[in-house]
Image (cartoon, rainbow, N blue to C red; front, top):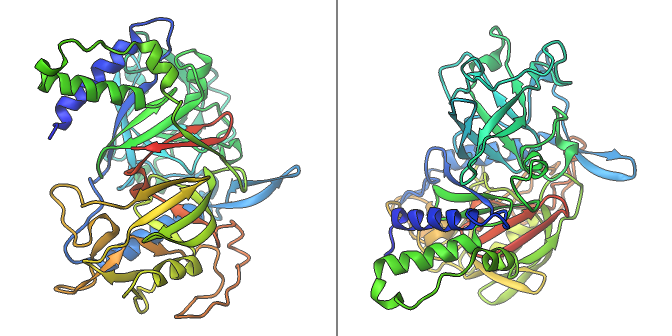
Length: 466
């Protein structure tokens, strides 16, 4: 088996090869990690923990609502009541379970954890008096500039300075503006972790600071050539975040070079693919889907869901979010899905958002996107974790049980009345006007099977087998 270390060395070499040719603007690749490591997959599921994590997911999505912007329906942050409510940005710096990259800022360079969030649109740095998180110390940077200290941003506690960022494979620092937020020491938010936060949502309607995003600035500074970013998860705790393209070409070259390193005698006559050819072919084999629904998130239409070769659901709207550890389905859709799995059953309250199925009979699941079917949730868990039932399982229902908890779970977002057993009547609550009553949240497990690219200018989602 090829080690991740060997593969990583080859990937960096492949990226450097592309960067060495000035006629091509190669993608910028960041290695990313999941804070706290892989999502737990014990032999026996901890249902209390799983329910708490599901509530966290629902809270993140319920932080927005739908509204009109002219003749368009858009997503906007909900107004929060309370003395400090107008100082709270969407997202949570340093949250356990967030995927993050190491960002180098300032001169001399300081390394700051930069959390990625597909549900928010702001690019900001939080500096608190807490000992938690990673710090950006502006007074230690010679290139930190406050444009006008008397002109704060429209968002309280935040100002709009500029400083340089140091990008992988680019030999020059890039000056970037950002929102720098400092809660007052007597406020509760001063106890939160410090760090950076990169919102990746495609719509400015979700922006609270009303500043220009990091990726858009990199386009303006000609550090990247196309308005695309992508994610590739290698396992449950490591992956690649690419800006200005995808990692597909570099990964192919890295695989080739890794094989050559391990088997040099078999590749003596092989010629290296040129950077130009890789750049042209990078996006060729992708399946592109237009974003639809209320403007704000990366929401697309899934044409169908297949279980063991039978199509069980048609035309399901989905929102993609790498920080969600489940696949979250509307209640009726989840029940239709599990009714097609022989022997499955819904758990009783308070765990009725979960379903169990026979551990040693996991279903074969395919997601269909515009005449493209891809098998998902297949295979075993990561090395070092064990869960009977493979990647579709969250663990046994109880110690020694032959039933496992499925990773497709029921949502309660936008549902006004609780659904019990076979009840089909439901209503959308007034407070749940976020339009999520019939929307799937397709989370991290999907990103293990499919490399996903996002074009923020054309508002399209591209997919390719990982």
